[in-house]
Image 1: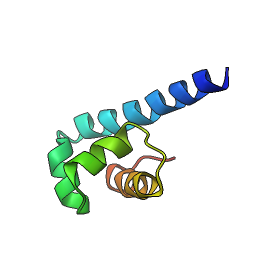
Image 2: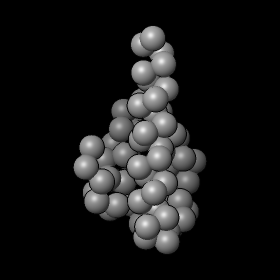
Image 3: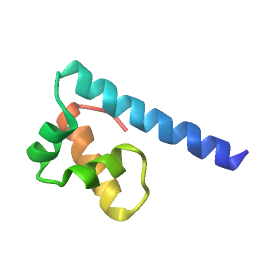
Length: 69
C-alpha cells in the first residue's frame, strides 16, 4: 500500500510539472536552461527522484511554473 501511494504521488508531481510546461508552451530543455540545470537532472527531478538535488530542482521548477507544492 505504501509503495502504491509513492507511485501515485510521483505521478502527480510529474503531471503538475508537465501541465505547467504545456500551459507555457515550454520544453524541458528550455526550462533546464532557464533554471541553470542539466536536462538529465531536470528529467530526474520531474519524474520524482528523491535525491536532495532533485528536490532542489523541483523547488526551482515550482517557482518558475508557479506551482504550489
